[in-house]
Image 1: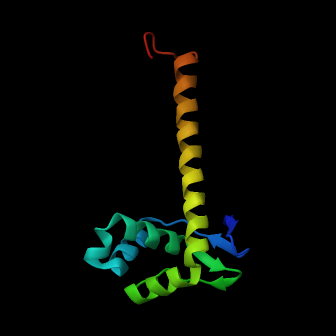
Image 2: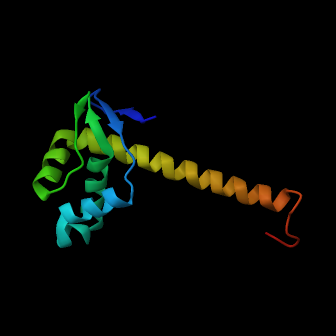
Amino acid sequence: MAEVITDAKGRKLTLRPINALAQLRLFKAMGPEGSDNPKYCLMAECAAMVADIDGVPNPLPRTEGELERAIDALDTPGVAAVMVYRAQKILETREAAEQAVQETKEGPLAISGAS
């Protein structure tokens, strides 16, 4: 099921996963200069993650112009909401990994001397 977040403007943003093919197409839309710029990549990925805004479709950008229109539609509140969502997911993944490591150290197959 798609995740839905709300931005500071109160808009509902439906998110989509970005698979390898979508990532490749996004790099093509960003062009060589854009895809070498980490800040530009972050903004582009945030825009690409949004499938719709309040039910209005937001297609995956395939050109630089489409990418700019997607970012313009999101504006700062939308991009910020997606960035916060991404940061929360990264923290959740990190916490789950740390928990798994701890359980491995303490479990029935614990490695002696593991720290």
